[in-house]
Image (cartoon, rainbow, N blue to C red; front, side):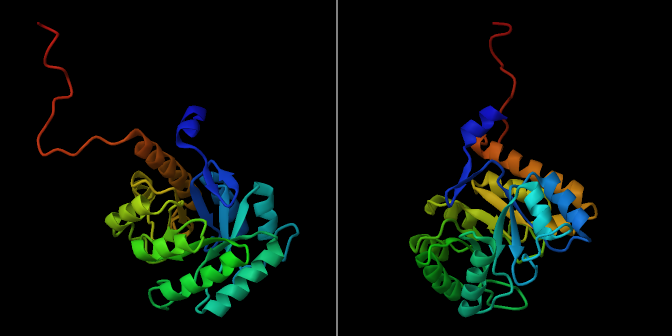
Length: 263
């Protein structure tokens, strides 16, 4: 595994290095014990938390913050639930003050039914936050143009969706993700819509740098087991990408040599 880490390198974001390329959320678990067990089983090092939905000011025994600290997680606060630029900016600033971190997963939602991000508002908020010294990881549509614009204003990564949040539909447009990976010289972290381990592996096989998920793990029949599966899938997909798949061919190619044994 050490050799593979050397080959693949660590994921670098905002001056931090991570060996795991799986990012996880904390919502929808039945209780704090399940949250802790699943997070541990995933092998993730980064966990995202919605500041508008979780009291991170609580630091004592039995608090979410206490569990994450015990696990040694890097907390990536997010602006989930924000529908305007002002809401997102206010939430990001509060997160930095509360957690003493410049990291922020930026979400500015544009539609209540699909939870698709508002591209223009996301870009506007990103410009402000970057100027204020935040390390901005924006959730966005799987659109190469908006990803390029977000990269140009100084975001630390881009986080295009695979499918609508919590849908479990998997990667609906692998071709857009491939274009984004080719054109954007920043970490590309697939965010939202993953349903099972094969979706996570597929994202990594496309060359994406990481995958973020919550519902796919927390909503599974056995969340802790699914967390373990997702960690393995992300590793396998990354290794497969680095190894390089064989070309697809219409006709068969013999896997055993047809010369040399009887010649």
